[in-house]
Amino acid sequence: MIEINWTIGLQFLNFIILMLLLNVLLYRPLRGVLEQRKATVDGGHARARELKDQIDEKMTRYQEQLQQAKLKGNEEKSALRAAAAKEEAEILGSARQVAGARLQSLREQVQTEAVKAGKELRTQTSTLAAQVASKVLGRGV
Image (cartoon, rainbow, N blue to C red):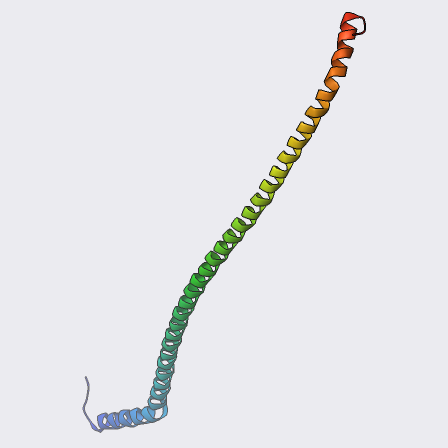
């Protein structure tokens, strides 16, 4: 059975001295290191949140700038296409005019050559008719 005597007080005093020594030598430095570590981790998390917010803000600005650049590019593309279509219409119009004028001059040239060939054939018709008639009849006409 347990006896209560002066050793229990000694044990209690030994326990208190050990707790004070452990508190000074082990627990306080350990708590300090743990608090410092927690502060470092919390600071790292805060810095990570700040960086994430900055990245999100920059991405938003980038997306806006990209959208504006796309709109500007589409506007410029449309303007260039309109200018190209206008230039194409002008070139085609002038080419049609040149082709029409050339076609008209060719028609006139063909017409004059046809008239000239008709006159020439009329002049040669009588001699050809006489030659054909003499060959068909077998005698001179």
